[in-house]
Amino acid sequence: MATGTIALALAATTAAAAAGSAVMQNQANKKVANAQKKNTLVQMKQLSEQAELERLKAQRIAGQLRGRIRASAAESGVGIDPTGSLFNQANQDQIFNTGVINQNLQSLTDRARSGYAVNAAELESRFQSPLFAGIQGGISGYTSGLSIGQGVNK
Image 1 (cartoon, one colour):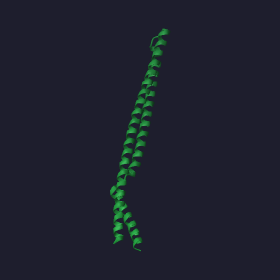
Image 2 (cartoon, rainbow, N blue to C red; image 1 turned 30 degrees about the vertical axis):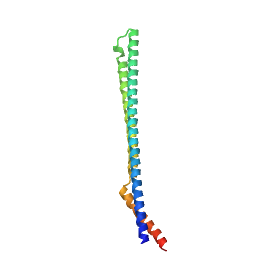
Image 3 (cartoon, rainbow, N blue to C red; image 1 turned 90 degrees about the vertical axis):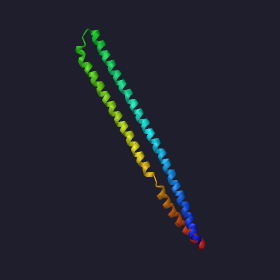
Image 4 (cartoon, helix red, strand yellow; image 1 turned 180 degrees about the horizontal axis):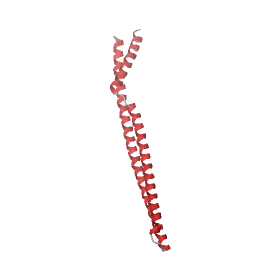
């Protein structure tokens, strides 16, 4: 009878410990997942703000170039019409540069999202069912208890 009592006691203790451990691990995983999500959102916001600054910079550079073209045309006594192609080129350059900035932002944002998705999937794979952890712990504790009980009875 002592063997059965030892086995059941160890089974209950081990099951409770395993279930408790699974709950604590799941809570820790949730905290890490939330922190990673916040980090990714902050990173994406920073990327967006950086891209907006780059767009403004490109816009200002194009405006300065157009101003130089106007000043140069005024000094030479030539009307704006002969420099129209230079204005068009400045506009095209600004459009191209803005497109590059937008594409870079998209690539960096996609990379941040992808990294978050990989980390989230990895964390999700670490989640344990407290019920199954308890059952496994209980079985392990029961078999250990039987072994100990048999050793005591000999």
